[in-house]
Length: 432
Image (cartoon, rainbow, N blue to C red; front, side, top):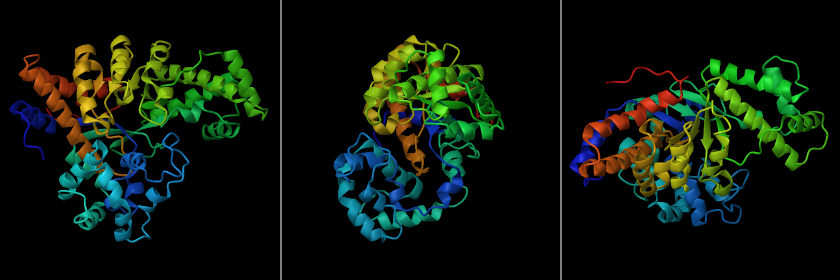
């Protein structure tokens, strides 16, 4: 662990270590999905490390970097094939690890190896012992041990496309299941699930989407996930025409589908506001991030003034733009999920700048953004605390705030603001 923090930073780190927090974004599935699968050293280099592996050239012949879905990645996928001996998989992986191990994604894995498994590094001399320890830990209760006991996390807002997640996980469901219609089948399924007649008109379909949201909210859902895209203004008449053609099997072209999607997105966003559900919005880094830039919020959020928006990832790489969006729009909040493992340098710069511009009541401090490797939340949280300690410590030492101010703001960001935004979320009372 680093030993060069200032005294002020150490005091802040100690304070944050005692905070009960809300994890504002993961993709964790129900715990049984994790424990029913064998785990080894490659658990720690799954999820986001894969993007650095692909950037370094792994599976270059089949993976171009822009389309992350449905792409064959045979080398990467072989790392998780338990039929292949661990030594053989490590030999394939080791040269690629040398290319990425200095990055922030890898640092979270290395820190997790140290903090959770008491292994100082990930290399030729440790991967077997580390694999044994990971396998031994992969038992029921791992979510509680990693999230509640180690991280003091009271609740985890997770997006895995399921409602049956179990405590401490709290679901946020994908809006696309309601807004991105490819034909009649998903409409039939929605009607059947809700025990309603098939909706022949767009108006009838939107009655079902509202009922769907209400039934999900009644059993624990606190928000709906959207993308920060350029949506056309709502046009009910045109959208109804396209909807009727779609559900009767008539030809619908791409532009017509997009028009329907835009109208449905606007309608469902309004329904979120009516039901006190948060619109969680991905913006920035992912594939062609120009299409999901945070600046699209400048037209989307004002069109839905009753709906609160949780803008993810500090808009990376458009950090300054995201800060200005939140500064100007009262219904847009900033969520620093994922950011600390993308770049600690960029995260710290963003934290410093948003303190200059954004009310401290509109910032959410942390979300690990992991799926398979729940233990990496520990490493990511360590990095996040480092970033806040550095920025707040420097501000204290420069006389821009005092320690009491810093502690109050950090408590807001890690605990109180998530509860203020996600009003349907209930958690055990935090420690004083």
